[in-house]
Image (cartoon, rainbow, N blue to C red; front, side, top):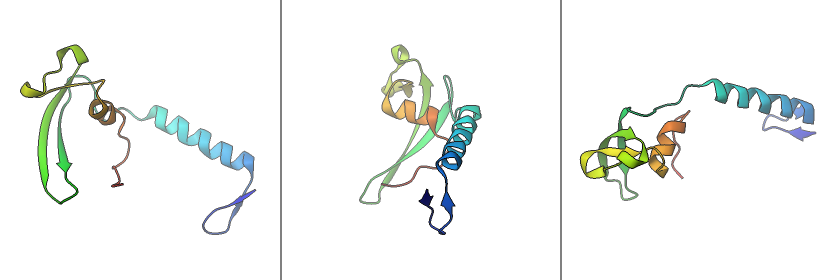
Length: 90
């Protein structure tokens, strides 16, 4: 058994059931963005400055950042597709 922050004791089976429910809910959520989506991203610097970047998500072979086309297979493209909750600063 494990304790959560409020001191409740959970069995392994309860934890596995909660994990399974979360996995199912995540699989049912539609992607945040997909091919052809036009998105605006705010890039924030550690020093506090920021810059807005507006791009259209496209297959990698059509990527051209100079023209605002971001490849779906890039780290940023993949992140935009899989965002399911607000990002948290690290």
